[in-house]
Structures are given as C-alpha cells and as structure tokens.
Length: 306
Image (cartoon, rainbow, N blue to C red; front, side, top):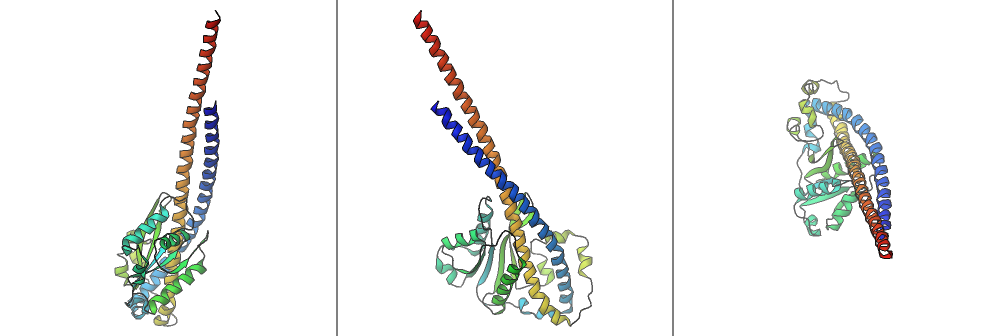
C-alpha cells in the first residue's frame, strides 16, 4: 500500500508540472504571434530602406560615409540572446557560435588583450559570459518581453559611435534568425564596416530570401528624386539603416526565443503525459499484485481451518 501511495503522489506531482508546462506553451504561442507580426511589419521598411541606399550607392556619395571606411582596433561582437531559460538550447547555441567565432575565451585577459570586445544583449548571455570571465564592453539586459525601437536606437547609436571613433575595426552580430515556428538558425552577420551592395548580397542573413525574389533586381533599379542632396541624405539614412538592422536582429532573436520555448514546453508536456501513463500502469500492476496476495492469504487461511 505504501508503494501505491508513493506512486499516486508522483502522479499528482507530474500532473501539476504538466499543467504548468502546457500553460507556458500557450503563453509562448501567444507571444510568438505578436513577435511574428512585429517582425513581418519591419521587413518591408528594411527592404525599402535598402532600395533607397542602393540608389544612393550608385550616385557615389554614400561610399564616402565613415561607415564604409575600415578602422583599427579590436573586433566587436554583439551577442543577442534571451532573458529567461526553459527554451531548450536557444541561448546555448548563440553562446557556442560566439565561442567558435572569438576563439578560446576562458580568462579575462583574452578580451582585455585587444582581440575582441563583447556587447551582450539578454540576461542569459550576459550571465554566461560573466561566468566565463569575459569582460563586457556593454550590456543590455533585460531586453523585456517586447523589443522597443528606443532600445534599438540606443544600441545602434552606441555601436555606430564606437566604430566611427575607431574603437573597433569590425562589428559582428550573432543572433538567431527566425525562419518558422519549427526552424530557427544561429547566424553571424557583419554590420560594420558596410560594403558595396553586390558584396553584401553574398552574406547569408535574414534577408537572404530576397536573392530568390525575381522582382528584387527590378526594385533595386528604382530611381529616386532626392531633396536635399544625396550626400546629406546618406548622412541621415545610414545611421537610420544601422538602427533598423539592429532592431530587426532583436526582433528575429525574440521571435526565435518564443518559438524555442513553445517547442520545449510542448515536449515537456508530452513527456509528462508519457510519465503519467507509465506511473498509472505501474500503480495498476502494484494494486493487482496486492489483490493477488490478499486472495492467496484468504485461500491459505481457509485451507488451514479445514
């Protein structure tokens, strides 16, 4: 009987955990829908801005902007992760990609030696890098449940100033690209210095699907009438372009985090249900064995009274 009571306690505990994971799955699904809507609403704006910059690039003045000039100093990495766990290997995949790109970072002097600097976005990534002894140039945590454009502007302006002042020679971003609910991919993209459009198109990134778009080339040759001059427009649009790119990467990462958490909670709920079924079968076997023992005792006692 003690065994049956213990199994019942375990069934109740697993049932409670399954209810929690199912609720977290539903919450993650609702947040994912909102993140998808914001991401899809941002992509057309980023596409139009790229078309306008392509027109400026053909005119020439945009290539004189500081964002196109190589610099000295270390390589800077913007590592974007999540604020919370319970999302499978989402955060760890981002960290692994950073470690592959930056090399061994087991001691604080690695980042202090001038090889690289790190900007962490997200509580989990920040905490992991701190435990590994990596000195952070800046940190943005927590990011919040919804990515605000204000955060992207502050982050992009800081990155642009650091590059423009020669404190880093390159700026790379490591994030998780959202492809679909069941598919996310960790990627590394170079944000600065900017390259010519033909070279930039060869980089894999969130807008890689535009390469397969038969209308992309047609859109790229649209002519714009600019007022004021193209050079003034370039000085205004290039910082805005960096802000939009950072904002899009943050949205991609947030949507990927919600999708990973929804999938992880769905797997946890399924595992809880399987465990409940196994415990129920074990409890039934234990009950049947107890009934069999009682019958055997009754029969043995009746035989002894004869």
